[in-house]
Picture 1 (cartoon, rainbow, N blue to C red):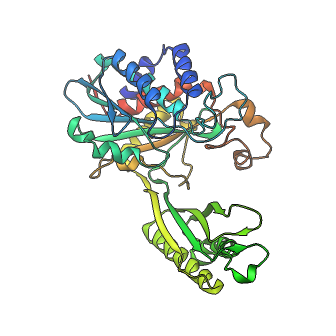
Picture 2: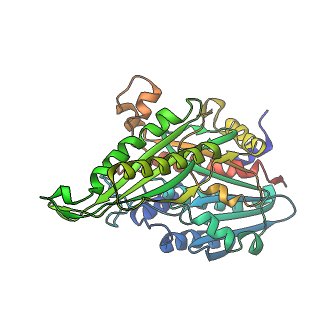
Picture 3: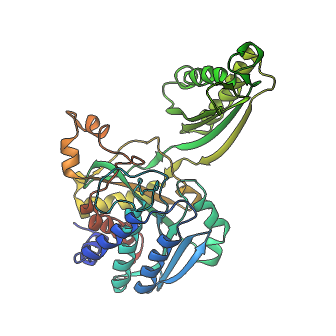
Length: 413
């Protein structure tokens, strides 16, 4: 038997304004904005929330948007979308490609905002079918890990109703039309680490008079690759990536410093601490072996927490999605190594559910080489790729997924 939440969701989303949603998405995609600069994006979302009847506040946590719809007694449910784009030059060749040089919605946040605006509109129009309070949040700076904490610090739960549950969804590669749910751990923690190697600069013709930090940095990068393979147990998932190495100004000048930027992905605090300690130890050892005049500087920077779904909250959403979209569309992908700052919204332990909506266009998926799902998954453009382009066919289903998730937690009227 279909639940009341599923039936109501199907009713409220039966006649979605698909053309308007598409226009919203195309506009956002053409005009991406980097973290904490999402003024235009926030304004577009705020305008739609006000039109739908929400009490709307802008500038929360910098460029965040909060819409509140009070609809009688019942639970308070928060729906969240992230606003920011990435410093990626778009290579999709689409007619609606980014018009901002070097900036692109390469992670699907434009799709998230469109889904959120559509769901907010549908739930407001159908407010006679449910009771409670909706808190609709457009969050800035997810990509830099700053936005969720900034909104909480700016009084998100003092200035607005405190929710009983948080809900969010994210576009992901995979054949369009599937919904990835997992109770418990679904995303990993991320930690940035910066290393500065100090050498002694000089002329490229006289290396014997210098301590070359480039050579030391090269050894360091190579040795760091053994942290996961030789220091982390196979049962513990972890990733160490060196994302940037910078040194020098000209061909014939040995510089005095080399800078290395790396990123750790872990699924437990114990493994994270072990990896940071290994980075410090290896950096110190390589610099000592090279005769560097100073010890290296190792700085732990931005971090994202693990994303751990509340079993009950996530189970409700997964169940209603199985009813709305069909049981075969809901699957457990296992924990991913990607990261999110969404858990920072769960101040003081608010339960949350976070899931994925697959969005690769059918023709792209079919054309991808590979004989099975995982081989194709590795070949299609992923989030953060300059060729990432979600299928517009996911616009209405994505709205329906948020609406049904919200209704699974709100009271029936």
